[in-house]
Image 1 (cartoon, rainbow, N blue to C red):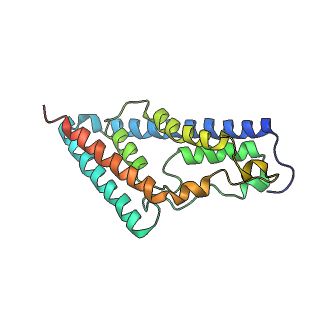
Image 2 (cartoon, rainbow, N blue to C red):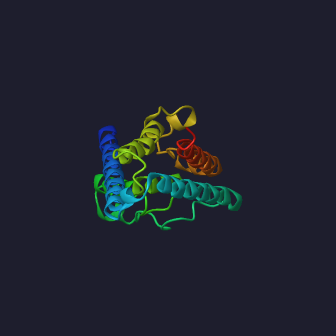
Image 3 (cartoon, helix red, strand yellow):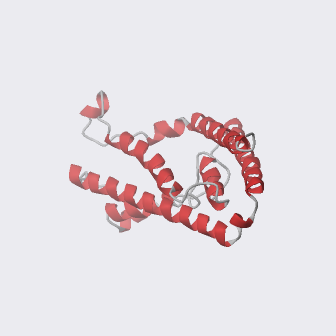
Length: 199
């Protein structure tokens, strides 16, 4: 990007716009998936059958994560696209942040590092998660992002006059760890679901 760096207030507006749009996208997508599941009859399927389907799917999604670790790649499920960077040349940064946040919050429209978000969508479709799960998903993504973006820069980066990488590259280098945690969450969710039958 060329030109003067945005002021602290402008940066805060851009971050707030991204976070708000991400939350709106996540809430919208999980609501749509949940309502579509109900409309297609998920609530008419016996609970035990829905849990069994979810458990099997969660194990398969964990296998997808483990395979992605072995192949050193991102989650192969979903579209292999991102919000176009060309938007930055045509629109204000707040507009771009809103478009990027909403697009990313929709879960299915951009590539994913791990498969855990697909598991969350599946549970919503099968009516096995609460209605507010989209808000939880959105906060689970944006809260760590806010910490990353707003943390004080230490050392050399805090003395630089030019912008430094806010940490996205460092996070992407943690891809195998994130995928491992995703696989563990998926398996744990499977065990918790199946544990309802052992009473």
